[in-house]
Image (cartoon, rainbow over all chains, first blue to last red; front, top):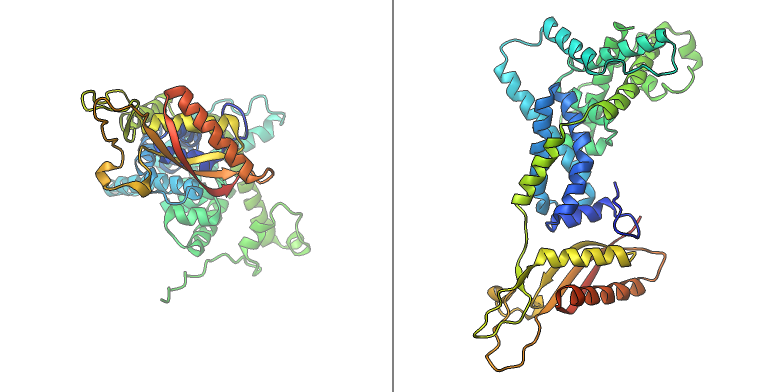
Length: 202
Length: 210
């Protein structure tokens, strides 16, 4: 991420982070606007609820503003903000699990599937694929979204951070406070479970 | 300290191949074995579908998933209410009978300095601290940001600032030249905009611009 000042060279993320650490609100705003999208998308895929995802965005960025002075290495800002956001998501999932008396039923999965169908109607219109393969692709994406619900919270986090946010293994390890080897194993299990699930949507 | 090894994953196919190997080469054409092995072909088909669906989901999410615009505004409102202005620095010297009541915050001067750096230099100012007494000259912590009032009748001297910067520099131009230019630009701008003099600018080079 870079930002354009009045003239001259684009500012690096470390520069923006350093200024935000000094209390420069304009620099914090640049960081907040840049990361709100990715954090929202992460939280939505983890929690499947817009309101909860927006809460995660707000909680995370307010935490960032308050705790920025404690960040010793501005180079690690990206891993740090993802860590705050991911832990918030996992904490909310744990609270939801404690409130729930039964595991997710087939009805829960079906309604989540239906939510995903409603979200982006006509998304593939205007695509230059033929209607048949467009429909197949649309079905597979809906299938993938539904399958994500069947993963454990940890598997879902590893997979979303790797495949949708392209974090490195060390960054994922930092986000989840797990060894890299555990992250690799978790990701492999997630892939297998998802791939097996994809077969039912083909 | 020994850590217990993670249990082995059931990632082997019926033919003995490992599913992770197939994942790693999913974008390549099938190997001679994979072309003829039903287990591998099934695994490749499943993973290929997953790869395609994943890429499309990533694109769709980026286009379609957005938080309500009010969220960012709420966050910035909270941050502004918790703003860290830093110390207040007197714009004019105090006298015994006229204590200085025109102040400017450390943050406001730092903003001027950063703007000067951005407009005039290849140097990126990352951290900026502003004091009215040099850290080496402090006699007590309480004296760090105060200026002793001048007795009435004495000639007034403008408060002097001591600035500390941590920066990232460009390696294609001589660093001393960049640093000297930046110092001159900052001294001029702070004098011109708020009428304050800078005594020292300490510059620590932390990094190199990409």
